[in-house]
Image 1 (spheres, rainbow, N blue to C red):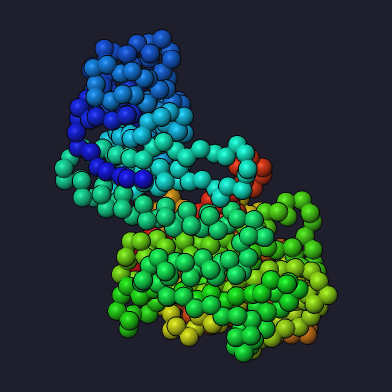
Image 2 (cartoon, rainbow, N blue to C red):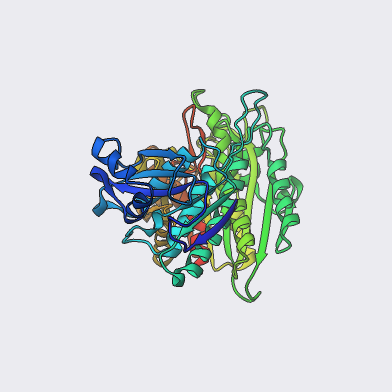
Length: 495
């Protein structure tokens, strides 16, 4: 997709389709009014007839436009004028892309960014446009033999700005948005693959492919024997029941001075989670192919950072494995020893994500990190607490938590601060080991974070529980969302 910035008047801009807005009750935007004068008042007549009401998300396509340079005119409902914000702007643009997809238009220009949006500027509106367009054009990996989804016709998209002084800001926004979409698309490609395709080896090969594509990325993959020499007993306990070999994937990107401490991203990479001996119920178990979304988000973030050539130092640590039941599988009641030396009583083998992450966090210490951020589809309890809208944010550092929360708000990929405390950690006590891996149903997302916190002493650490935001379940719309790549890239942009 090619993006560009336009400063031409709507009536003179040659394009296959011009996108303009109309507010609630047929209140035409200024751009719509200008075009209306050139096309003989067609929009005004539609308003009078009640055919153009401006309800948020409504679209109306006018073809064979005479009097203006555009071939088509797509009018999008913006809702109430006083409520129009960046969120409504994104939704309106997404509706426009849905309607545009049904046409043969090869290029289009959006004038929605010329509207008054109190919580956005030329940069953020252009960046949002690039993200909306890029995500609208995303196609899941297609394993169908018939009824394959056609590729979009649209190949060029423009965003209009009011003044030449805004061109550079908008171009920067488009560039950043395009890089973020590239990262989100990689994450979605990986997470949407079935588990018999996306194995730990497949993930490690995807990381190696990134290193071949970008010379700024280096990758090392550790096998099970190497992990055993590192005494990663917690990680290896999860993969014990699987025939698929586990992998520890380490990515490095140095865009700043080597003396600068890196940000370390640790991503949960359980490519399929049956629950192990603590077997999950069969309903919706197929969605456990998404249990490697944390790992996929790390790879996606690396792609975005390399694409944008950001001046930051970044390390990724991805423990990748399956959690399967077999005669070799870890059993409830087993005691394992983590890389940190702490012993863990495994009371529930379905609480496996924390078992692989704790060893990965310990491994991350060798990079002398500035901060460590782990990303994981860790608990169903977080979905109960926050639904599918907000990522759970836990941290032992208030400044880091505030920075991640602010990044999520700016990126429209929001996270919500959750508590951690000694009273919750107390629930993880064990009679037989240093710590138990579960602490009951109450506060499950919090006690899971507290478990990880036991391995973060001396580190500035944050945990993102993306169980409710990394993918959409169900049937027709099932698939990866690409979150939290926008949040992570925004955080790094601001570093």
